[in-house]
Length: 167
Image (tube, rainbow, N blue to C red; front, side):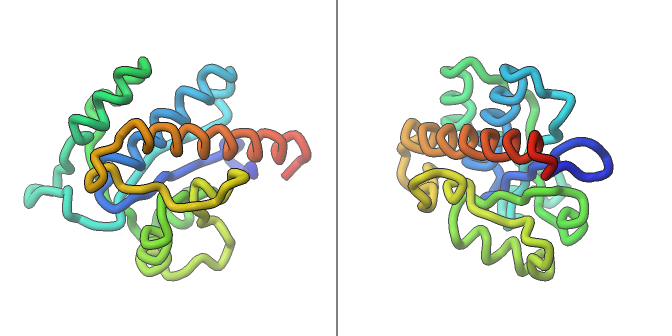
């Protein structure tokens, strides 16, 4: 789905924006880079809660185990900090991608619904739709890595096929 600005804009969303959604952001950026399509995409991430946003308005950095698994796969999340999804994000991003059904519920509340059908779950783009478990609670960052990688690859495949079909 290309908009008039010429880029496909993807915002990944989870509860706190310190584990799953930043993992998705940097996995997708890497996939796009390796495909030579960096100029065609804008990719970021956000949270549905303000739990990881400090009283000074500065978000917490990527959770160390999430940062570690990214690093183990050769990805650097730099100084990424949590930020909260806003109503204005709905008009700015072509795709707002949640990690689990609860995220989608809160995303719709924050954005005032999904009248344009821009919201989905990451693993709905795969052959095995399901929620991505929160590694903050499970401690299984490798499983989360695999799920997010599978979802990002399927999403990129669908969007590039769609773009070549003029969608």
